[in-house]
Every structure is written in C-alpha cells, then in structure tokens.
Length: 427
Ligand SMILES: Cc1cc2nc3c(=O)[nH]c(=O)nc-3n(C[C@H](O)[C@H](O)[C@H](O)COP(=O)(O)OP(=O)(O)OC[C@H]3O[C@@H](n4cnc5c(N)ncnc54)[C@H](O)[C@@H]3O)c2cc1C
Image 1 (tube, protein in one colour):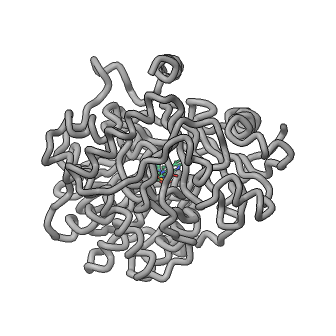
Image 2: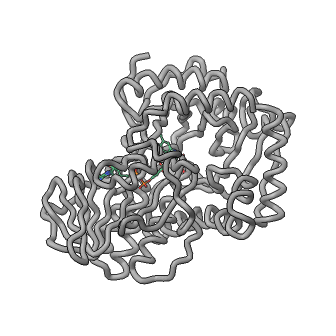
C-alpha cells in the first residue's frame, strides 16, 4: 500500500492561523508549545488577567494534540495496582481521582467555550489479549471499586460480541466515564478560546534558547527575543534542545494511525456496537474506534521511532494487517489515511508537572494526554495566576535515565522495542 501521510482529523476542521506577528518585549508568562497543555494553560492565565504569549514552532495544534486517537480516558498508563504499590494508598487515590476529574475538565471547557468537537461519553473498552490479562482486569476492577469508589464492568468472553465484533479477545473491561472527541476540532477550539481570553498566539515561533536574565527569562525565538517572568514548557514528545534538562527526561516514541473509508452503517454497528474507545492489554497495544462519520480509526506502535515519511509509509500496511487480525470482516474496506505523531514517555511512565531549573512544565502523558494535558495545563495556569496548588502530580519524583545515559537522543529505542515485545510474549 502506498499512501502519503494525510491526517484525517485535519480535514474535518479549519485550524485557526495565529494572528500575532510581532513579539512584545515582555510578558508575564511565555508558553512554549500550542497543544492541549500550552493552550489550556494560556486560556486560564489570560482569563485571570496575565499577559501571556504562546510560542509554537509550527502551526497551532501541530503536535500530538491534533494527531491523536481522540480517546478521553480515565486512568493512567500505570495500572491501579502498580500506582498504589509505588505511591501509597492516599497519593494513588488522588492521582486516580485526577484522571477522572480530567474528563470533567475537558467537558466543562468544551461546554463553556462552545467547542464543536463531537465530545461523547461513549465509554472505553479494554480488551484482554490473554486469559491472564482478563484475570488482571478483575483484580483492577475490584481495586477501583474498593479504593477509588469507581465502578467499571467486566465483560466475559461469552458476552464480548455485545461490545466488539471480534472473537480475538478473552474478555473486556468497560468504563462508562471515558469519552471520545475529534482532537483537531478540540485543539482548534482551545486556541480560539485562549485568543478570545486575550492570550497572544504565535506560530512559526520556534524557541531556540531560554536563558536567565535577572529576575526574568530571555527567550530567543525564530521571531526574535522575548522576556518573560515565568516560562511554561508544554512541548511533550517534541521537547528539544531549547530545554535540555527536560529533553533528557522524556523519551519520544512514535505512534501511528490509519483510517478507513466510511463504513456502511451495518458494518460499523457490527465492529463497534456501542461506539466505545477500544484498546488492548499489550505493551505494544492497538487502539481503535469509529470516527463520528463511521470510519475505523486504528492506531498502534507500528514503529518505535517518531514519525518520518518512511515510518509513516511503512505503518500503513503494518496497521492494516493489525486491523484485519482483529476485524477480518474489514478485508475489502479501503484505507484512506495514515499518519504519525510522537508520544512523550517519562522513564517511570507517569505524567509530571512542576518546576525544573526555574522552568514550569507538564508532560509525560504516555498516550493518555487528551484529558490529562488539558487538566495539567489548566492546573498549572491556575497556579501561575496565583491560585492554590492542588495537583497530585506536582512533587512526584521525576526520574531521568538510569546512570544518566541519555542526552535526549533515544539510542536505546531498538532495545526497548525488543524488551516490550518480549514482555508481551511472556506475560
Ligand atoms: C498518534 C497518537 C495517538 C494518540 N492517541 C491518544 C488518545 O487517543 N488519547 C489520549 O489521551 N492521548 C493520546 N495521545 C497522546 C496525546 O495526543 C498527547 O499526550 C497530547 O496531545 C499532548 O499535548 P501537549 O500539548 O502536551 O503536546 P503536543 O500537542 O505534542 O504539543 C507540543 C507542541 O510543542 C511544539 N514545540 C516543541 N518544541 C518547541 C519549541 N522549541 N518552540 C516552540 N514550539 C515547540 C510542537 O511543535 C508541538 O506543536 C496520542 C498521541 C499520538 C502521537
């Protein structure tokens, strides 16, 4: 299959162009990156009277925020049992509650700002690739009910056809609190909301250097220099050499998606009778859903390295084969879109927010960023505007690479690839 990169979501919306041209001399807060994190923070800051500039290297929403699966999910990358074992009962409770609150946060912004982004509380379905994974779901469901007062529903293999038109899996877990949306429409709406609130948005404004300048920071950008009292780094998987201290803590990992032609109504109902956000239980997972116009959108880590024309091109056929292994009935359905984006993984696979070398940051979403980036961006914006800090991810230790063997160029990805393949094989 020879498909050129085309991002389905981009063709469903007009991304707003940044109107600002000339940088002001000084702002209260400079935000680096115009995705969910940066724009959510800028919106809140501007509403609270701060002078804020958002500096985006490409176009508004260019990064993962307009390229993702649009799954607005409860929970974190780490399972609930690991979370409790690692951080203790109380902290784990607060973190899990934040993951649920992050969906309310998205819903509230969408409502308040009138963003037309097809947000629907469709729930998510996690499917078990092995019988042991289903047993693990049962344990997780019990912990969520007992410890977090959060109800999910187990679906045994015999009943799975009511949730998914596939016989590949060994059971499922449904969480009705999760939702789906069109991420490009959502990030476009966030940009418009931030601008309406008074934030200054700049595209083609790559930040090249950030230096201390007395009590301020001085940012050197492709559009010139700017001074700021505070700097918020919201660059996620695209964190680069302008902020080397953060780049060393984030592993950029490619994720890829295909979207089919529009499915006939009956076939769409067969493959996903309830329109859930679906993902499987492997480390190398597949995630998939119907789009609002009834295409099958099917994503996964077809390559580990971030998107390039080669990794995107190769992903189309790899993902089509993956899709057919789940849904053989889609054999004659054409694939019309393929694209890639970069995820940001911290070494502990947790989201992190806080301050490093004076710079504020929120990143490390590990594929759970639609809701969490909105939430952490909003929380950071509130705090920088003088509000209270009630963010359970602030102050969580932010580990770097073991032995410091990492300068931001992920030479170890092929080894990590092999390791996770091995784990999927044995677990
Ligand atoms: C293919 C894919 C599928 C995904 N699916 C889901 C999903 O279904 N559900 C979910 O919850 N999460 C998903 N995610 C993750 C989610 O999209 C991200 O966690 C989230 O969008 C991160 O938002 P952000 O604003 O922090 O970063 P981004 O949206 O990546 O924005 C960062 C921006 O910073 C800019 N930037 C970088 N360096 C500089 C610089 N020096 N100067 C100026 N600008 C700079 C970049 O150009 C970029 O636009 C997916 C991600 C990918 C890639």
